[in-house]
Length: 256
Ligand SMILES: NC(=O)c1ccc[n+]([C@@H]2O[C@H](COP(=O)([O-])OP(=O)(O)OC[C@H]3O[C@@H](n4cnc5c(N)ncnc54)[C@H](OP(=O)(O)O)[C@@H]3O)[C@@H](O)[C@H]2O)c1
Image (tube, rainbow, N blue to C red):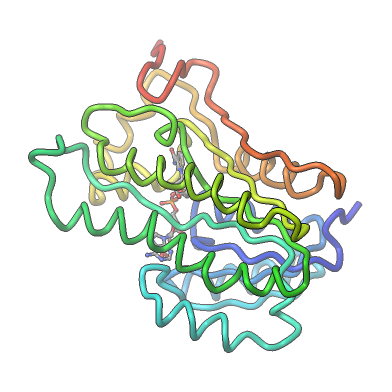
């Protein structure tokens, strides 16, 4: 049906997980894509794959969302036709460890806050003015159930996702009258590289997170993001909270 034909979507953190799955869903619907992440070799390979499999244009770029100078220069150097961004999926993010706050390591604190909060803000700061100029656009932030509740061992991550919740709400108010939709999708447990990254590559520990429960998959979130991005012009799905059936909130799960 090509619901996104003629649209340009900018996806951060498109080298894996939810960002990558969203890029595929968008490409299936004919969107041209700006895909970015730090691992440029993965992004370049993925760009080739998308161009081969779908009739879409892809602009692949290395981008660390924590680096505001890099964000500025990447956005400023987009060719003019690529600056007409219709959809921003502000997705790059990560969690590090499950330390209690009083024992948290400083590196993890910086990484989570710099990526999830400041990174998302850097992207908003550079991309949203392009939308304001055109009075057109849709920003979809990746929140989390951790943005609605807090759990022990996830204090910094929960704080970053509470921040995303606040940023989404404030941005929506800031943009009133500009014809720009602001939404967030807030998933619970999704099986991606997320736990592998959280536990610094410890596969066994990562696997345990999903033991006895059927989690959400990246495709489930991508499908929801696509649904949000393709509603009628007058409809903004402001916030979608989604969980696996056996997840009760950010902390409680039923495991078989
Ligand atoms: N998985 C879950 O259970 C879950 C639940 C709720 C919300 N979320 C949120 O969903 C988003 C995507 O996570 P995921 O589950 O898809 O994890 P993932 O598979 O680990 O993917 C994370 C993506 O973010 C990118 N990224 C990380 N740091 C970055 C940086 N500094 N600059 C640019 N890109 C960066 C990674 O690419 P590079 O390493 O190549 O840069 C990767 O493409 C995150 O915001 C996460 O907090 C996840």
